[in-house]
Length: 300
Image 1 (cartoon, rainbow, N blue to C red):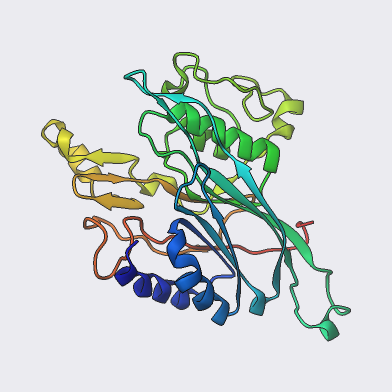
Image 2: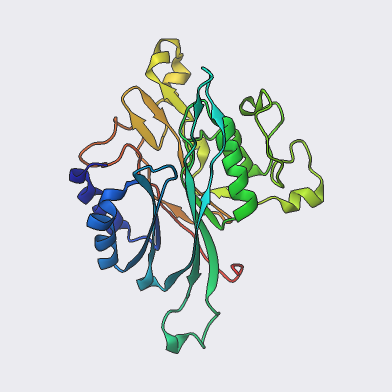
């Protein structure tokens, strides 16, 4: 995101005033000169983590201290996996995830703490999974690591995976069929609690960490490319008007998610039939997504 588009992005956040904000692909040169001072002035605690391998961008998580939230734990998890593309070229996967442990004081204020439930803890994972279009198996492995090792209350970010992908199916159902296209060719290499395909054994099922999408993913198109436009029938052309989270010239896709251990009670509307991004109104090539959740005593 260029400097001229930063103020528009900040206006979006000011308007929403979220309790927790998770940003991806944040240019590190704007963290100290723009994002940190601006967000701290609004009452947020700011945490930035760079990608591995000397990349100059990363993840930013901001927590509203004005609303009784405190970031008490910070951990950066490496999501590095080997990846060789279809041409036999090896790539360095340098993505990471931020795992933030947040204490939520429901009532706020020392004088009120004796009147209600004690502060609760939740875990928010801010993730940016590997981007390469052919690296579906890598994203699947990255998702397994996040679900099994971290077991987040909320997993949000640019996951670079379609709703029909093995990664998203694993997160939202706890299993993926062995014949899923993303797993062909012996793609999986790591055995985890969540990757119990074709197995509904109660003990294993209870061990899975299953999350729910804040948005109804049936309202979103997986992807569409103008290169295949001539092959679309009427139904496919109608599908192009469905919602997406990423739109550029010739390509639209749903890549961004808010996943939680409970359903959302409200979501921010996403435009239909979106124009190529960015625009004067939308500063990024991804739409801003947001959701409200009701937190209760089930948190620990």
